[in-house]
Length: 106
Image 1: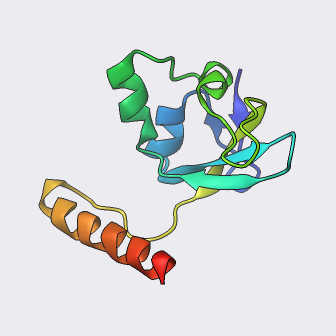
Image 2: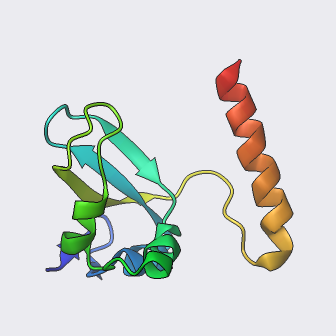
Protein backbone atom coordinates (compact mmCIF):
# COMPACT_ATOMS: atom_id res chain seq x y z
CA UNK A 1 0.00 0.00 0.00
CA UNK A 2 1.31 3.45 -0.91
CA UNK A 3 0.29 6.71 0.69
CA UNK A 4 0.24 9.73 -1.61
CA UNK A 5 1.14 13.06 -0.03
CA UNK A 6 -1.09 15.78 -1.46
CA UNK A 7 1.52 18.51 -0.86
CA UNK A 8 4.52 17.00 -2.64
CA UNK A 9 2.95 14.18 -4.70
CA UNK A 10 5.42 11.69 -3.21
CA UNK A 11 4.81 8.02 -2.47
CA UNK A 12 5.46 6.64 0.98
CA UNK A 13 5.33 2.93 1.68
CA UNK A 14 6.96 2.83 5.12
CA UNK A 15 7.22 5.13 8.13
CA UNK A 16 10.96 5.22 7.39
CA UNK A 17 10.20 6.73 3.96
CA UNK A 18 8.19 9.46 5.66
CA UNK A 19 11.08 10.29 8.00
CA UNK A 20 13.59 10.32 5.13
CA UNK A 21 11.42 12.94 3.45
CA UNK A 22 11.82 15.13 6.57
CA UNK A 23 8.23 14.67 7.72
CA UNK A 24 6.65 13.58 10.99
CA UNK A 25 3.73 11.19 11.51
CA UNK A 26 0.24 12.47 12.22
CA UNK A 27 -2.12 9.98 13.86
CA UNK A 28 -5.83 10.54 13.45
CA UNK A 29 -8.34 8.48 15.44
CA UNK A 30 -11.43 7.34 13.58
CA UNK A 31 -13.37 6.84 16.83
CA UNK A 32 -12.98 10.24 18.51
CA UNK A 33 -11.27 12.37 15.81
CA UNK A 34 -8.30 13.09 18.11
CA UNK A 35 -5.00 13.92 16.39
CA UNK A 36 -1.41 13.61 17.54
CA UNK A 37 1.95 14.23 15.87
CA UNK A 38 4.91 11.92 16.42
CA UNK A 39 8.50 12.49 15.41
CA UNK A 40 9.32 10.59 12.23
CA UNK A 41 12.25 8.85 13.93
CA UNK A 42 9.73 6.48 15.55
CA UNK A 43 10.73 3.98 12.84
CA UNK A 44 13.96 3.24 14.75
CA UNK A 45 11.91 2.04 17.74
CA UNK A 46 9.84 -0.14 15.41
CA UNK A 47 13.01 -1.60 13.91
CA UNK A 48 14.50 -2.30 17.37
CA UNK A 49 11.36 -4.15 18.48
CA UNK A 50 10.94 -6.06 15.23
CA UNK A 51 7.67 -4.35 14.27
CA UNK A 52 6.80 -3.92 10.57
CA UNK A 53 7.62 -0.54 9.02
CA UNK A 54 4.94 -0.60 6.29
CA UNK A 55 2.28 2.03 6.95
CA UNK A 56 -0.71 -0.30 6.73
CA UNK A 57 0.89 -2.84 9.11
CA UNK A 58 2.36 -0.22 11.50
CA UNK A 59 -1.15 1.10 12.23
CA UNK A 60 -1.81 -1.91 14.47
CA UNK A 61 0.90 -0.74 16.91
CA UNK A 62 -0.62 2.68 17.63
CA UNK A 63 -3.48 3.60 19.97
CA UNK A 64 -5.38 6.82 20.47
CA UNK A 65 -4.31 8.52 23.69
CA UNK A 66 -7.80 9.79 24.36
CA UNK A 67 -10.08 6.79 23.75
CA UNK A 68 -7.47 3.96 23.43
CA UNK A 69 -8.90 2.90 20.05
CA UNK A 70 -6.58 1.04 17.67
CA UNK A 71 -8.47 2.35 14.64
CA UNK A 72 -6.06 5.14 13.66
CA UNK A 73 -4.87 6.65 10.39
CA UNK A 74 -1.17 7.40 9.82
CA UNK A 75 -0.40 10.30 7.51
CA UNK A 76 2.70 12.43 6.86
CA UNK A 77 2.84 15.79 8.60
CA UNK A 78 5.22 18.67 8.23
CA UNK A 79 8.02 18.48 10.76
CA UNK A 80 7.79 21.02 13.54
CA UNK A 81 10.33 22.27 16.02
CA UNK A 82 14.02 21.51 16.25
CA UNK A 83 15.31 18.44 14.40
CA UNK A 84 18.90 17.39 15.13
CA UNK A 85 21.07 16.99 12.03
CA UNK A 86 23.60 14.64 13.57
CA UNK A 87 25.09 13.19 16.75
CA UNK A 88 26.67 16.51 17.69
CA UNK A 89 23.20 18.02 18.19
CA UNK A 90 21.78 15.34 20.49
CA UNK A 91 22.34 17.52 23.56
CA UNK A 92 20.52 20.42 21.90
CA UNK A 93 17.61 18.15 20.98
CA UNK A 94 17.40 16.93 24.58
CA UNK A 95 17.47 20.52 25.87
CA UNK A 96 14.67 21.68 23.58
CA UNK A 97 12.52 18.65 24.42
CA UNK A 98 12.92 19.27 28.17
CA UNK A 99 12.23 22.98 27.72
CA UNK A 100 9.00 22.43 25.81
CA UNK A 101 7.87 19.82 28.38
CA UNK A 102 8.50 22.31 31.19
CA UNK A 103 6.46 24.98 29.36
CA UNK A 104 3.53 22.57 29.05
CA UNK A 105 3.58 21.92 32.80
CA UNK A 106 3.26 25.65 33.62
